[in-house]
Image (cartoon, rainbow, N blue to C red; front, side, top):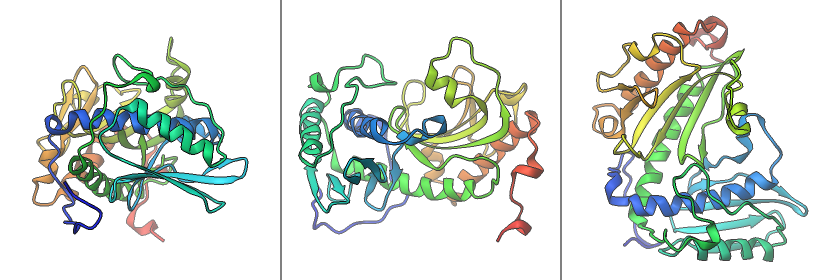
Length: 309
C-alpha cells in the first residue's frame, strides 16, 4: 500500500480492469455523490445542471468554489495523500482520511465536518443513477477503498481530461466544460448545435433540461453492464438517421444498439502507439458523423487552424 512519502511513478495510461476495483469504485461513487449533493444544494443553478459537477485537479477531484453564508469553500478528493479536504475562505479546514469504511460512517463524519466549519446544508440522502440505492446514512454495504486502484483511475482521468480539453478547443459554439458527473461517474464534454431538441415526452425534469437542445456528447467511465471495462463513448441526442451505421475511427470502435452509443475501449487506447491520436480520432470522427447527418452548421461552430488566436 502506498503512503504519503512514497515516490510517484508517473504512468499516464494505467491499467483499469473493472473486476479488480469494482467494490472500491462502488464505494467511491457513493462518496462523490455525497460531496456532489452538497454542491447541488448550495451552488447557483447553471443550464443543463452544470452547477453540480466535479473537476479533475492536480490532486484528485474538486468541487471548485462553493458559496456559503460566510464566503466560499471547496471540497477536494486528494488522491495523492488519500484525504478528503474541506477548505474555506476564512482559512479554516477539515481533513477526512480516505480508507476502507462504510458509506454511512463517511457520510456522518463529512456532514459533521461541514457543520463544524459553519457550513449548514441539508442534502437528499439517497444516491441516484444506481440500481438498488441505499440511503447514505444506512449504507454499510459499500466499504472498500483500494488506494492503488483509485490512484490509477485518477491518473487516467488526468490524461483523458487533457485530451478532452484539446478536443473542446476545436469548437466555438456552445460547449460544456470538461466535467465529472458524480451521478453517472463519468468525465464528459458536450457540444451543442444551437438548435432546440424535440420535447422528450415523459422525461423527468433533469433529463428534459439536459437534452433541451441538440447535443453530441463524449465521455469516459469505468464501465458497467455490457461494457465490461473502462471505455470512451460518444452519442448524439437526438440521434440522426444513419448515425449507427457511420464508419468511424479507429477500427476498434463499435456501436452498441441498445445503449445507442459508439464505444472505444480504454485498453485499446492505452495500448496504442499514440493514445492521444487514437482518442482524438475517435472523438472527431464520431462528432463529424453526428454533425453531418444532423445537418449542424459546422462552418459557424468549429474553429479552423487559421482562426486560432
